Image (cartoon, rainbow, N blue to C red):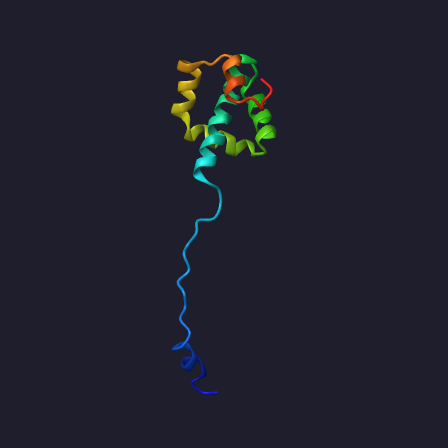
Amino acid sequence: MRGQQSLFNSFVTKQEEKTVRKGRSADMIALRDECLLYRYYYYIKLQGRRYDVAIQELSKEFWVKESNIIYRMQCNTSRLEQIMKQEQPAIKQLRQQYPWWTW
């Protein structure tokens, strides 16, 4: 019918859809990155593993590609330096902070 769409459009109001951010939570990514940095410290400083072996282990543990792990570490360089040079936590502290990991 002619004019059918315009007739009903005046009676039916469209509700504006709220935009909801989908995807990963920035807070959760920050927590994961923090744990990743401590785990990297554990492998490099406390276990004495090579860089490439440590990255491979982190990739297996966090189910993240090696290139993404390197990228996340580059994004958090200042925090990583703080952990490696200033904090230098002992295994006991790491166990208390992340009890679900095997340290």
